[in-house]
Length: 436
Image (tube, rainbow, N blue to C red; front, side, top):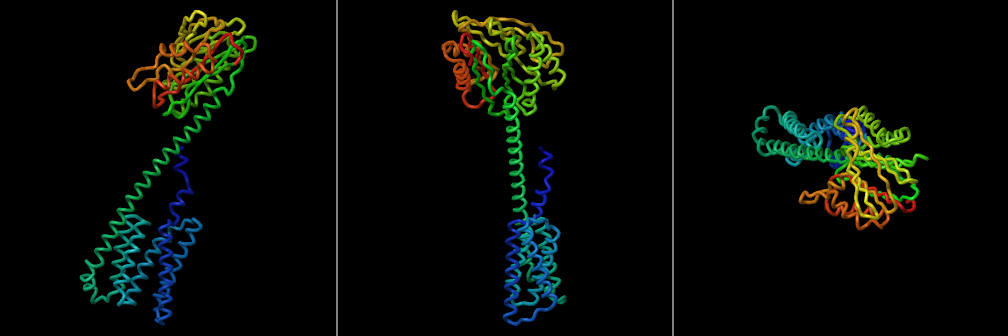
């Protein structure tokens, strides 16, 4: 992304092309020269050849600048020559019309201001010094040059230098503000680009539609943190034919783009291992080996993974550092927390994982979530917690699975208030219902 910003020839050309201010100045010079030539022609004044040719030269320079503006062409080499020729021309005009010297000298101020807009403080100062030097070299005769210096030092020369310095400083301040604005726009553009890429990766990684499980209703509700570039929570349900279904709820450490970029790896590694291995314990062991080998040391994945057989309702699982799901009995109202397993995946090489099994009976509700739900904190830094999650779920057990999932996520968001600090995911599996 940084290389994309640093290597932009078209932006360099745009910076070198004439600005709107230079266009206005060039148009002003062309109009002034044409008016001057018209006045001299009408008054039948005879121009000296050097003045005439220099006037035409300045006119050509400015016509080229105007043409380059409309074509957005880069002609930086012509600008110093145009300013030098203009200073020479103004001095020759003053020498040719000494009675109008005071009025014509004012044009030096315009030239200095345009130079500051084009070249900054240094360019304005050099232009002012050049204007004074060329004026003294061309206008007064050598024997009275010192008198010109004395007479015009405070009335014309000093104000010209002050205008050059002030206008140059103001332009430098403007340029710094513009650079700061461009830097902010660059950061914002990069952030938006990261968000767009992360959202695309997230949408690609999570299933668009969950498979139907006979006798079971499934609901999922998820949202992305306000300050993240994408979702780091992952869920999936994979049909395994006669073996039933593999399901997973995971949380990838980190909310940056590299963290979100691991989602496809987690997705396809889980699906591959679920196809190959018959036990959650083996799936967890193999996933841990893969993540330890192919992820950074400070990166890990917490995951609850399970194999579910709809015919018997048996759910064999491993909890690898994930928030323990809660299995709520529809008949007795008892709750069992599914926390047995081992460490998060990708932390400890050769970690051992224990496997457990439960049975989902008609009316039972299994609630799985990530820590973006249970760790959601309010303004008093109180966490939503698992007990509050259970209290929110118990009165809703008769509702559809999707409604339960959405209600639990909404309850955590309302408890937290403004500012979603972490991704949050709730999956609800309700046994004894038609496939959802």
